[in-house]
Length: 164
Image (cartoon, rainbow, N blue to C red; front, side, top):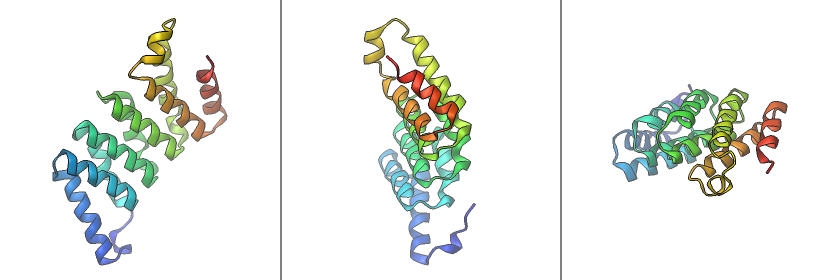
């Protein structure tokens, strides 16, 4: 974990303020705090953002996932995979898939493939449901994440999923 000592006193104070708001703020302020922490991009925020993935309201959890993608610290990959596969809100699942694409870590390939397979199995033969599903965004985010990861396996899965 990176140290706060590399920051100026003002930067350190600002980071600590947003971390405190993320944990203790109301829904809207915590969402703003997650966004700000992502913009600041310091790895010291990663543990608090990972905790926010499943301990805060969905809007905050989704913002935390996006922030983790922006920060780019790969220690967040397991927490993002869990959020993508297990969180009860599709907005959080989708934000986690997008963040995994930002991180470009091959450890996410199997989980992203699992999302694609689940979607394809659920809507097999149902063109209307496939196009109009509330889970369509997650499906597309998983394909894009695989394309961003870019390994041979990831590209092959994304290509298969992109075929009509």
